Length: 155
Image (cartoon, rainbow, N blue to C red; front, side, top):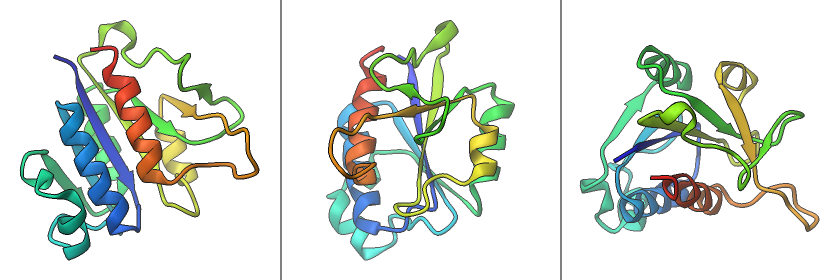
């Protein structure tokens, strides 16, 4: 079974983090890297929102996202940032497990500032969800849910 690693790059909302834990548990074979200011399951709001899924989803904390990406690069894990850039690929037209990789990582960023440029520069590619309305993005918890299930669909 292929593995998906979710990297949370300074996601500030504990409720979003808890929601992502629940989605990771539901999808199966998903691990979470919590980076920078991202709250961990010790946070009461993460604990409350995750409804116990934090016990079943493997997670690691990193002082900064660069450390997490470097760890993934050492394992030759492709890293895809979820961010609207000039070269971003449509999430439904993207080949998540290129070259039959056994593991990939999706990076999700800060709710206001997105993913920092140094992390985008370290990424192998970028993915976006097209928006038809006025807003340019969805809530990070919702975005993560959509993309987690889109990526595991290729399992």
